[in-house]
Image (tube, rainbow, N blue to C red):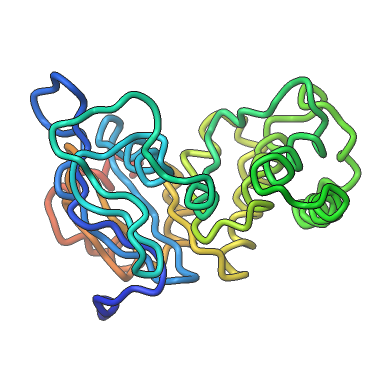
Length: 263
């Protein structure tokens, strides 16, 4: 498949560098890629390759030391060489809500109901009308099969149900890009499919997504675009998921995929 044009209506990372203070080398070293609007990028790689750090920098949870992060050709974050500021990047609240993120650990507030967890940010951060937000939250819960659990507490839900609530909490902010970081890693095997089905439905609806996963069959089914990270660098990139899994071009990709094969 032909690589998209340089002008990207969607999401773009150019020459991104992430390096912690006193570290010998960057965690992410000269990372560049683009994700067309409505498409799905799957990020693969061994543990410690920088996958989760990449998503955290994109979300603004970690400052970057080089490069740029852009949405629809608007730079929303630019690296500052030689600095490792504490906490988040300097993005405004409006810029932050353009990118949503779902973590593997759910991170639901235990003292709030399902509805309270979903509606808190749009009401407090985006200053939206509470009744309008609650109505949208209920529609989202219906979309993920949890309309009857709006008044439940997080401890009353299964892991798969909590992760679906976390997805609703991200979607209600209307993010242009949704980041999913190993969202099935903490789930029992029987709960994995119910969460992945929700993500597949989001992809079909045209939600732009960056997904970090170790679920290879899922990656193959959902990806429009794949990058393989190793040692903080992109070692293989493909705009054809089937070709990547069947005929990887680099020895490193062949080694990585072989670890998921059993005879």
